[in-house]
Image (tube, rainbow, N blue to C red; front, top):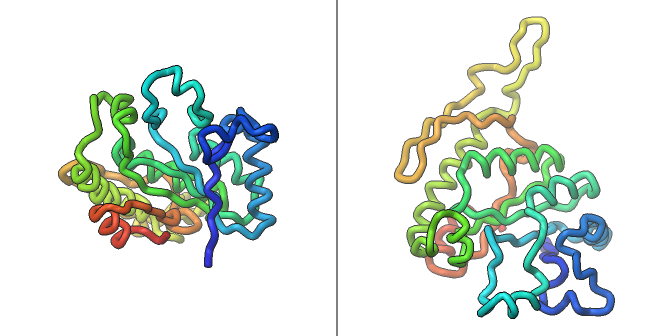
Length: 234
């Protein structure tokens, strides 16, 4: 069994920040996250997991009600996990990122970079996003339909995994004498043209220690379960 620690700061419960021992600013307290990841490693936990959304994802009726919610602000997870990579040694570092409000190249590059920075400990929790509040930060009034989001996500995964395969494991020669930086036969141009994306490639990050991050997915709908069956490793 592999165990993951799902750690939203300052706590899962909406009013957890009011506890006498809580750090109410935990969502933006790097030292707090360092202590959490070190504790998790000592406890033999395998994975640190951070949820995320592209906006404040609440259903509060107004700002007065929202003002009592302790989880309104927090670090962007890939930035945070990149920093935590140097304060940890073996725990997997898993960040949530949406296929609806990102482009495949950006996601491929960021997670490949995290995998390098952490020496092969990156994980990606794949989501299609869930609230209109997120859509309204990306030139939309409301979320695209559920099926449309998963339709985009399937092509997104084809593209992003293709980009991670831009370079073979031993593509880079660094041969100073011959002047050959990489072996051209070990470079693969994706040149994807689909319904949602046009992507030539290659990725401008060398193949990472894992090849690609561990892929995590938690959709419970029919589309989500089909998607997980195709892509998810956790």
